[in-house]
Length: 265
Image (spheres, rainbow, N blue to C red):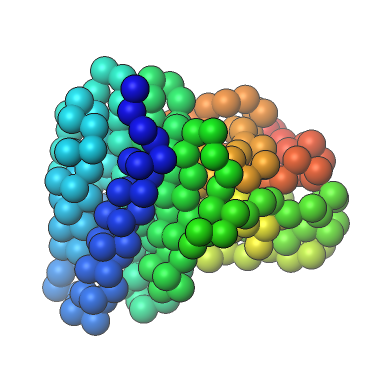
């Protein structure tokens, strides 16, 4: 039986240490060290080095655990435990000197996330939780907001950057939310967006085209803070299904119906 609270404490330290490395190297990023992985999908030596640092630091915590990591620096799959890692969520923000950008680390036990840490580097904010615990921000317990309707909600989202198949539906939904909510924001880091739902800064969030490492830790934080998470169908395939809806429990049904009206055509 592993001690999730202890492992979460150590994971927080790792995220903050790696975040410090990421911040220190921001001014060293130039065009010649930026690689293009795909359409509008960038990576730098900082992403790769940060991921290697995280993996090497996590290995002693659960010796049998595998890794699902964005940059693929480790490909071992664990039978029971697997870490899901985004060493730098918001790379485009990072290389442009724009915030937010974050380290995201989740621990999956079989098919269930049991630990999540999101460290938003520019504001030095560490969001974290483990199974059976509340969600925290820098040692203070957090909860989702109490906005009861879409009309009273501030909504977070992310713009598609390489999957434009649903762009027309997405833009129609965006127009609807601009008119019928308190506003829509696009910070550029899904992990941070979900952490902001967990602490009540956002009342709801949705996006498609995401990967497991973008959402695993943040989605867990939302749930631990009293919120709801699902895919666009209203089901549980939001970690690997590349689409996510997250909100508090009061506006969830209305917000989900709103997303489905436009995105399930």
